[in-house]
Amino acid sequence: MSHFPVLHQHLVIVGNGMAAHRLVESLRKLPGAPSRITVIGEEHSAAYNRIMLSPWLAGEIDHSGLLLPSAAADQPEKLHAAPHIETRLGLRVTTIDRAGHHLHCANGEVIDYDHLVIATGSRSFMPELAGLELEGVGGFRDLQDAENLASNTIKGGAAVVIGGGLLGLEAAEGLRKRGMQVTVLQRSDRLMNRQLDTTAARMLTQELGSRGLHIITAANPTEIIGNDQGQVCGVRLAGKNGIIAADQVVIAAGITPNIELGLDAGLDCQHAILVDEYLATSDPDISALGECCQFQDSTYGLVDPIWRQVDVLAKRLCAQPGEPYRDQESATKLKISGISLYAFGPTDAEPHHEVLTYHDPQQGEYRRLLLRAGRLEGAVLYGDTRMGPWLFQLAQDATQLDSVRQSLLLGQADTEALFSEHLTQYQSSEPHAESAGSAHASASCSDAKSSDPKNVDFKSVDSKNSAAAQEAA
Ligand SMILES: Cc1cc2nc3c(=O)[nH]c(=O)nc-3n(C[C@H](O)[C@H](O)[C@H](O)COP(=O)(O)OP(=O)(O)OC[C@H]3O[C@@H](n4cnc5c(N)ncnc54)[C@H](O)[C@@H]3O)c2cc1C
Image 1 (cartoon, rainbow, N blue to C red):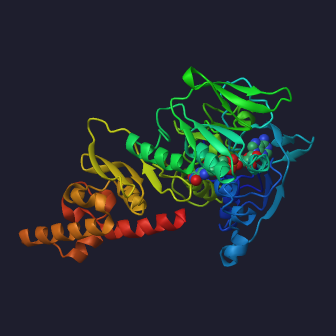
Image 2 (cartoon, helix red, strand yellow):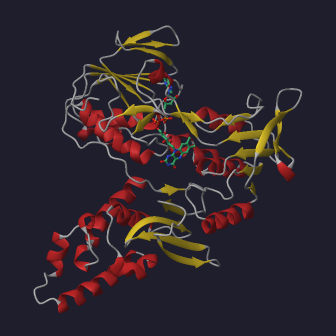
Image 3 (tube, rainbow, N blue to C red):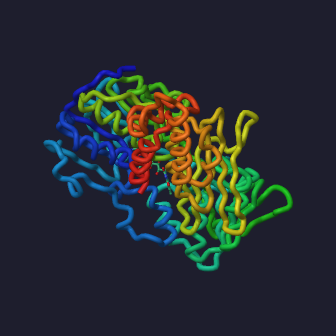
């Protein structure tokens, strides 16, 4: 696979989702962008913030809250000579002719490209269940899905959400807030089993239950049942739960990358379209990014890594020098108002982990950290999550935390105070110790290799932390 910079005259991007939008905005800010860009999106609406579909469904924001930032509107001074950009909405690309360098579209149109970016995202994974075709059954992936869910809401009616992960819970809460009686069916024995340990999952279940959500764990749906009109009316479960009544069923059981275009064109694919560390596919004239791509063993379902992919690809397309893409851990937040939850890393403690826990059931506070050889590997925060980005940065930087471990659960201020104390002790016991200022200037978190307090640079953590927090906001 090629990772050499390439210059292209006509760049075509298939897909007009979050990755494509961010790529175009990045290209507009770089010198050397292709002179002509065509974006082809199957959805009829302009690119929007898919993440915000959950608060939209919950009625917390209106359509304006779905708008994505535009460099032209927000930072016109940062734009370079604008490429000619054409966006084709409501158009599906059906095949890629690699030899002829053109695309065939569902309306019969043929569009030429010099370089192609596939950014076709994912669709809702549909489990093998009878009844998926019934009226009132669907996924929660795009604006149309969200609008269907909202318009089919029956106040006091019953909804079943299959899937108790992030997306399923956000859909469930949205429907509950619209007045439906919602049951969540979770196959695992706990909610959000990929992010939460049993204690945090129990707290979340209690909170959602107190709001009126009915949650069934270890659930095994066997069939979606319809009435004579082909409208869904229930979900059958294996075991003693029988049939749960449903006027709407939302399938939120995972995602399937949209790889068919690449697969049919003969690009190397596994779970998704394979890319190298510069987002090139097995065809040097075609790149891929976002949820439709696979880098090494990873596929994607959160925007954080996709933003880093965009940075890499934008630079490559503008023939700018740039670092290759590398996978990094991502942190998870649940977007249900009134519930603060932040998690990253492994959920279950293994024998090599040191587990630090703080639990105040009355205040609804829970923090659990997993350390390995003095370095933070995972965290679950429920209740007060303000220290989440700071802990995440400590984990990213593999900061050695032995000397401050007892204060970690209390947050950044206490940990810094303890660090200063250690530093003072260290300096007074070392005849030739450096000053605190020079220790901060010379050491960085990422290269801290021992429990020597000089090696922990919380100032650098601080600034990275605030950058991460701004990005998240
Ligand atoms: C409800 C919801 C909430 C989410 N919340 C979060 C969150 O809190 N945090 C987070 O990090 N991530 C969240 N995500 C995930 C995040 O939205 C995705 O990771 C991100 O949108 C992926 O970007 P993408 O461009 O790869 O795919 P998409 O944004 O899905 O865009 C792909 C686009 O390609 C189009 N397309 C597909 N095939 C074709 C074709 N053949 N021709 C033309 N167009 C085509 C599709 O119609 C789609 O518009 C959420 C997702 C959903 C659905």
